[in-house]
Length: 486
Ligand SMILES: Cc1ncc(COP(=O)(O)O)c(C=O)c1O
Image (cartoon, rainbow, N blue to C red; front, side, top):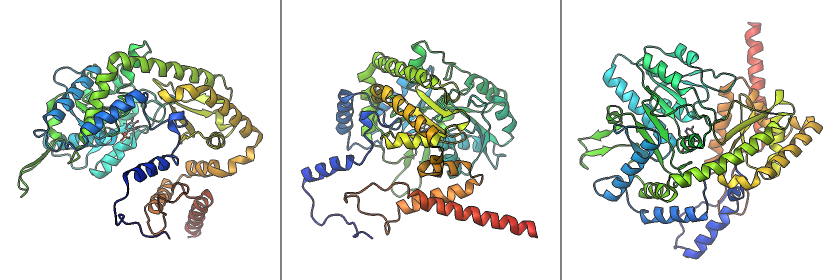
């Protein structure tokens, strides 16, 4: 067990602290070298410098009270309006900035629950209808708000199926949700068809554009075939678009838009009998970091439409190169028809095993998103990935070669672990194990000091995990034979 960590008795020297921070960075994935294909949305050093300066100039300001900070109010309203025009909203479209995709989705779910409670009080067990690829933020929100998410199967192109969604609609449905595009495969759900269903059933329809909201409009302007996905489509009642993704703002910024105040009004929360005074809050957070708003506003001012279009053009060119290279590898299959710069790929009939390939790529220093149902690898092509596309393809080909020559590797390393996790039919068992990982991560009686020079806390060693899973499998098998004997 490590020594107990406390706030240092005496303050430390500023330079030593900053030095330690830069050393801590050495433990992270070198994303600027293009080694990660998700999570960081980066333009260049100049833009980074602007974001940092803009953020710092509103570093201490707290947007808890918009009347105290007229500056932030102006910037928030302008970001909302700029986003609304990008997504073809009319003058009635309104919304709020939030801290990210998850908060935007949480608030949309909350808003529609509040609306349903007021307009349809007979609904006692509210439900959301979506497809299996919808972002987990919906389920998290629904869980917190005591709502059920009913999920419909996707088609073979990984798209939501309006007919399957329709089957799940009941008198308890309060919302339909779909993605433009979905995170796992980057495909666009058939928004117009789902919107028509929503209109026919008189239901609100949220389009999750968290990852696509600041990318699809430029991809469309570049001439790629993008079916309408935004406020042009009648029946779309709200859209979430993350400014901290392809809006190239600082982390902690998303925009949640509603077709009109008729919806947004249900989002506001007011407490009138608090000794601290009347408390009113438009979003989930209480204190709201001014820096994230200022950085997003500055990003939009600095890049302009021309800048966003230029970056989108470069990224899409690299995406096309990557796609062509992947299509040229006989073992590889791209899942669905990617709408923008997100590609998910696997191997045909999982031969050779995609997770063995992933292990090989990881050994070469690539950070991967491993996906399941079906097993696949996810890539979001960012600007900093452009110079390494060829290297990635070369390493991928070598990884395929290795996997073909070493079929036994499927039973080793992370390939075995993820393969097993993906195959286990009892998802509750998987959940229990993943929960254990978090428990270990935050169990300070076991974890070590972050200042020690050692590997960051990550997944526990596969053999221990495997052991636990095997134990659970054995217990289940025993239970099964017990019931059979009775
Ligand atoms: C489609 C989609 N929705 C929601 C989210 C959640 O966003 P955040 O991680 O900012 O909470 C993501 C994140 O990648 C996403 O891709």
